[in-house]
Image (tube, rainbow, N blue to C red):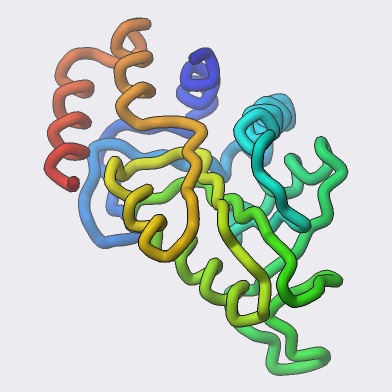
Length: 195
């Protein structure tokens, strides 16, 4: 897919030595936050999300803070979908809300995350929404780093839909001579070892 080339060229996909949120060192780093400076890529990803969710019903869209928010916004603007916003921490002043927006208990929310490895941020968001009375049956992740994560989310009654796949991305970059064999093999070894 050409989107892999675009993400690589803007520096959203990097190779080297990186420490992940899980405190593990990785030879590959996916930083989709950089897409906020490339509206044409945000639009392309929003259109990919739109195709992915054709058979899904939802009342609201919500992005996992913070990196999922601008993908959710782009998708919501493209599809005229209502949005909700969740905070990382509940406000201790003003309205003291955790969840912003107008919603009714029992309605459905489609949650959008940028990258998932362990799924902890996404799971925390889903639990917070459910605590507010919102149903979450489907979540979209732009880039899935973990091959077994979908079955984990099925255990919490949520279907996880991935747009981009790390193995497909590595194959694309190698086939198109954007990375060499050693980077390809190091990355595969790390990903397979982490699973």
